[in-house]
Image (cartoon, rainbow, N blue to C red; front, top):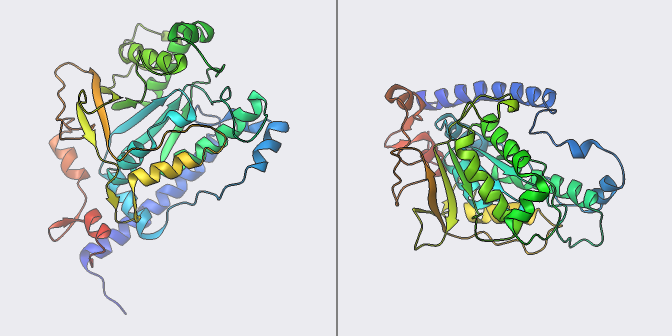
Length: 341
């Protein structure tokens, strides 16, 4: 019988424990499908579901074996949450989410303002309800590919808008802001990213950028939106996409993931490819530049670092979260290189 080293036995023991925990979490997730992360539109029968059934794509498979073990170890070592805010399903930074989830083990979540029901479809004439249901299903598949949760503000996608003021008027500015504040308080992100800027893009995209900036302070203020019935939460940073010249830092989703055999940029592109009903989806870039637009007091970002660079944990907690080592390598690096354990 093959003998295992102490490190290998430790990893196997951790894997058994984590597997049991994941099964328990799966059972809990089934019970809590009425939570804000659930998709209520999918439960209504009718022509929209018939339309969704006509667009067939291969199911997104759960990661297994050494890949799942690698991911579980990375998850244990990173307590931070990254939120991506997007106006429509194809506005999310899927490549960045793949990098921070799959490589760094951050919890990731995408907040969508709308379900994209007002946008032009490539699958032929459809009602807004049909497009909304189909977009919802495909967005969940895309998010699953990069390991992200999904939360909807359920603002109406009314089609082309000329300005942020028009979009905020149609949505009701205060109601839309209340929903964004509630999302931040419920999901409790440490870092928030978005592709949107207040002066660029469509009216809805500009409006979402404005709502996000306004909600950064409002979500932390216990006197604001008390009717949301949630505890205040102070996110640490908001980054918006920028060009290289004005960027605060650059990330490289073109990096190759040896465990999965794919770059994070390509993984993000695969996620975007699940959105078959949307036209003009932007390709995922090899390098992404972000500009820090909302730091907390005294917060500084290293241009050569990461979105979480400088966020410090208590020393004892940081040591307890560090993955085991195999020689000079962390166990996650050893797995990626297929080193013998």
